[in-house]
Image 1 (cartoon, rainbow, N blue to C red):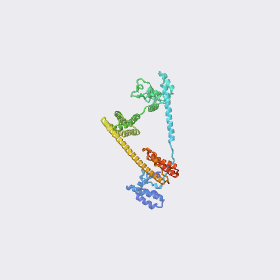
Image 2: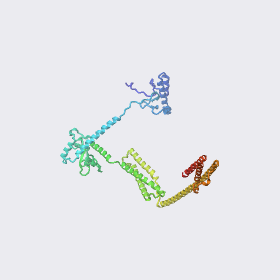
Image 3: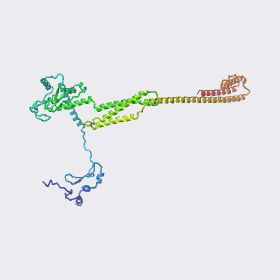
Amino acid sequence: MAAATEVREGFLCPMCMKDLGNVTMLQGHFEEEHSTEDKDVLQQLRGLFGKAKKKILGEKDEAYESSPAGIQSSVYTSPSSGALSGYDPSMWEPQELGGTRSWTDLFKAQRGAKVDRYVVETNKLIIRLDKLTGPDVPMEANKRRAHEKSVVQWMPDSHTKECPYCRRSFTLMRRRHHCRLCGDIMCDKCSQFLPYTFAKKLTDPAFQNQDIEVGFLRRTGSNSSLNSILGPEGDPHIRTCEKCRKLLERRNEQIEQRTNKPTVVLLYERLKSCVVAAEELLTKYMPMVESLSCGESMYRLQEAQRYRVQITKLYETIDGLSKKILNLGLNNEEEPSQKQLLLQRSIRAFATNFMQDNMLGLQALPSEEQYLKLQEERKLEIQKRIAAERQATFEAQQREKKAKEQREQKDAMQRNEQLKQAEARERSGSQKLAGWIPNESSHINFNNTDDPMIQQMNIIRSYIKQAKQAGKLDEVQMLEQNLKELQNEYLRQQRQNWS
């Protein structure tokens, strides 16, 4: 039996278990004696020997260092035997992911059941507490004791011989006491005392809004059960156990969270209201400072100065609140959590960025003397601008007048040229008339103020009339053609003048 459990140490051959003394002799023995064995086993052992040798000599294993993370070859000394062993990842295939299982549903079910149980138990305690502190509770000790037993059934004294909390046996000096909310038994040292004020806060919604410091009563070092309770003068209290105390305090914390906001929340709300007020003032102040800096009289300088003072005070308030949030809870014995510290630093960074973006770009207002000087400069600038505009308008009118005169001269020259051309055509036409010459003395005396083209058209009309009387149809047709051309040219010139 002893031989079967014998443990051997050293450089043992894995085939014949012979101790060779060192790594070199072990490797040589294995290659000579067991070269015909399985090649895979031989290759693995060769790698093991080489790594072990390098490990002993203090050399680095390049294959080990260059192998990917998670599949590196490891050479280590066995803590039990001191022998060297190794692992070659090339001998194994990558392992596939096995079966998986989600524990979320199980966790939710367990948590839901636990929360439901706490809620049900707490609601029972609140209902019983309301009955114990109601207006119908008798003041006499005997009747009150009977009323308390009617609210919840008390555990019989014979069911327990020791306190379930401190595990001390009940004696004549260490009496049994019952929890008025669940009926369990405990000793006087383990009893908790709930004041009526705290009970009212838990049961009466109207009492929850009152800012009164309430809670379970605290003990002193006195041995007397009556004198060991510290509370308001003569305030009645209810005896409870440790379990009921924890449930009621948890309900009180939930009420506090719903009704009272944490200090960091209150400070942040004040900071946000200051930020909103500063942004509203900035929207009014920026147009004012730009207008007043140009010397305009659209806004009043006193009103802008008042806005600037308000913005500066808001920036100081934001800076102070953000610093207070940053240092909140750092001087307490119990330091805030990392998430709360991160939140406080983020709020401080937000306030700092807001002040840098707006305070650095906040333009200064001009003084009274500077503003008056700017107004005078603006008046001079406006006068110069009006004078320049008037000069430009006058010059434009002069250019337009000159251009109009040039167009009229050009039109008059064109009309004179056309009149000459018409007279030449008339003379040439009258020369072509065979044996007929119009009587020029029969022309109508036109007003000299008439347009030359109109005079020429009237002359041609008189020629047409004479030709018709003389029965010269060819001459009539030629003269009517000349009249038509003159009329078209006259209408074209009139359209140009109108445009």
